[in-house]
Every structure is written in structure tokens, then in C-alpha cells.
Amino acid sequence: MKTREEIIKIIGNYNYIDNLIKKREIEIETPFNEYKDENVGGGKSSGGSNEQVANTAIKFIEDPYIRTLQFQKDTIKKVFNDSDADTQRIIKDNMFRKNCKSIKFLSIDMCLSTTSINKKKKKFIDNVYYLLK
Image 1 (cartoon, rainbow, N blue to C red):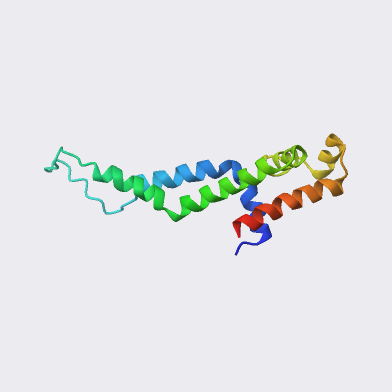
Image 2 (cartoon, helix red, strand yellow):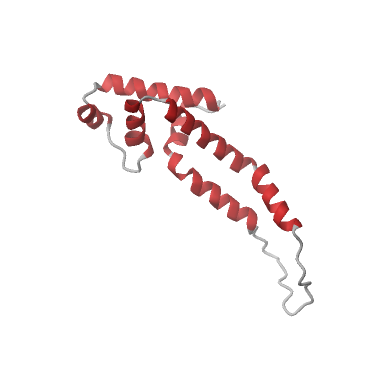
């Protein structure tokens, strides 16, 4: 079970999930083998098979890390899209951005109290937490 702090970190990494998935796909496509024999000048067959492509595609689909990241991304996106416009702005400016805006700045900018901003943010985090646990 994930803690609230882990959920906050996952939400903060939302914009980087696609990069993490792509990085993992590259790791699957090109596994590192320290003792790989390149067989230079040897008799490799030139007729490749399509099984390797199919196996790689299956590895992408079945990889638990990719599946977890995709589930996290889909969950955050669903909760974000189901939220009201104020909550979306709060989450976008305070959690999704690399240089996030402070709650105090948002309260002045949005003409909302810091308490109401914190409540909206907490509700968003709780909804994501409930779906990811």
C-alpha cells in the first residue's frame, strides 16, 4: 500500500511518466549483455524472423513497471479531468510544474483563501490515493 507522501511524489512526476515508459521500452528493446559475442565475420543468417518483434511487443505489454506507470498516469488523468476548473489550476500550477507556484501565490492570483486551496488539493490527492491504493 502506498503512503500519502508516495502518492504526492507520483502526482509530481506525472509529466515525466511518458519519458519513464519510453526509457523502459528502450531497456527492453536493447538489453545490456556484457559478454555478448558480436560474431564478427561469422555466419549469421540474413533471414530474420518476425518472432522477435512479436516477443518485444509482448514484453512491452506484460512489463509490470510499464503497466504500473501507465495505470498511475491514467488514474491521475481521470481524477484531474473529473475535477473542477479551480482544482485543475491548483494541481497544474502547484504539483505538475517543475517550478511550482506556492499556495500563497495561488490564493492571491485566484482570489481564494489558502484554506480552500489546501482543501481542493487534499481532495485531489485523496481521490488519487483511493484509486491507486
